[in-house]
Picture (cartoon, helix red, strand yellow):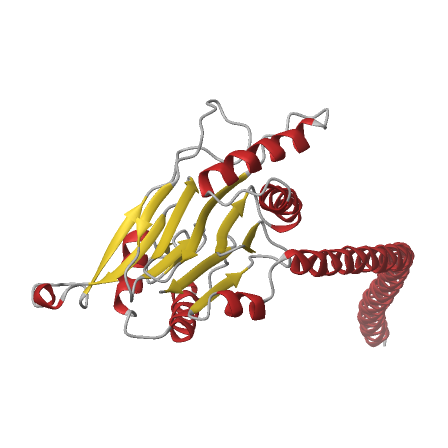
Length: 368
């Protein structure tokens, strides 16, 4: 009995120990599970806190960037607005200045156009030229509205005087000099009664120098000129000529027996060179030479300024020069004088092309 009681007690103790062991294990497992759950909860909490911090940081950063961009945009808009206002003000100033400039330019242009009317008034009308010289032409092409070149004609007794003149410069300055020089020619003939070309140029030079010496400035302006005097009689036509730097060309038909050997369309060109001094102040004071020339029927007389030969053009954009000018005149001798003028005008425009005209052009042609 005791043995059984001991045995039961022993089993009871074993069972209790086993129960205690399992209970402790369970408690330990529960504790571990609880710790794990607490750790997971803690991690989740930390993650949430971290996410909140990151979100807060990103929100603050975004807000800061937005404020910064807003500030930059505000400053930029303000600057742009200021610049636009300044630009508007500048445009208003420019517009006003442009308007003033246009008004001034129009006033200047109106003055120059009026000056052209005055200059045209001193040029002989073409009707008068044709009356005195029926077989003639005048090619007159100013570079600007007014010109330094001019043509001149006078009739005194049985003598017809005509000239192509080139004054210093072109445009308004040239036109002002041309008025003084034109007046000098008129006074030489009308007041002093001169018809000899050399003496006319001497007197004109004297008058021009006197006019310019009235100024305190040292004025050295003047003109180059080719001046002809035609005197008609029953038996012959006498030409007297004088030149200041500019020449005289006479194109004459070649006699029939010489035409076969002619390379110039049956015509020859005779050239008379002017004295190497202008009408105006010069280093030497010499009288101008008068050349007396017997003309023949069919002769063509040409006096001109340098504008035609000095024009740039052609394929290479070079000066025309005098040799091609001579060849051109020789090639058109079968044409009458009006046709010659038209040919010369077309040739000049074709040669010039798109280039600017460099100088005034004046050519007078007279056929005997």
